[in-house]
Image 1 (cartoon, helix red, strand yellow):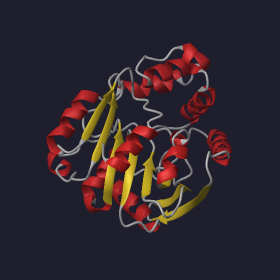
Image 2 (cartoon, one colour):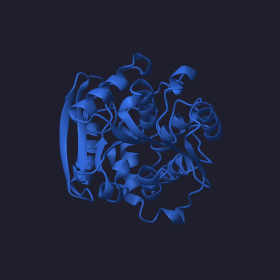
Image 3 (cartoon, rainbow, N blue to C red):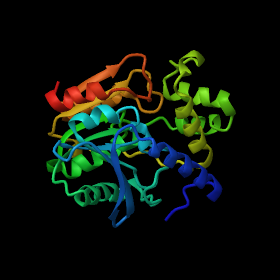
Image 4 (cartoon, helix red, strand yellow):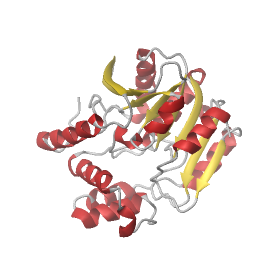
Length: 286
């Protein structure tokens, strides 16, 4: 396993805060691990087994706290599995294979098999979006619906984003605001931070002690994107500072003409509070 934290003390501080957050999960849930050949994978399961299964995959330098504000809505109609991605700042194994190894599609397939699911829908953000695309192009028959929030792999990401975020995370409250502006596309002011203090503090803590992935997410080949025959909802912010929105949208249009695509105005890489929009698509395909 890789050392993905800058210190053992920092790791403990991040994970203790995460576990405090998990203890206040907004809905009734079951938290457990499933075993894969890549190590254990942490799951937060919410909702009824009688409802269709829905996998949630967060972005980089993060964990399933990403879905804290969406889970109450999503779990009303779906049996939701929030998955901590391996090699990220959650409770799954610290294993971090290379993107090119094909390991992430295998890991997610093993995870889904361990959950006894033969087919599922997937909602995924950023790095999680890349992993969802990787899985969906490898195992298309196992994906019922695909919801992608600013996914990687459709256009080359902007490498300067990560380094700016790392630097800002070390600069206290001012740096926290700059980081939020960066992911929000510059559309966030100090007055709009009310209610986000806990989110900001945890994000800053994670950036302070966690070692982010530095490799760029590889682009998917044309051949692989032709495998995307399932219903797809793609959401991008028009001011995304990490992944070029319009280039990504145009690329997906070439290979998945059935995809429903929305470019959200005044929105950066941080796409939140979209549960109603996602459910409208998952249930009605509109």
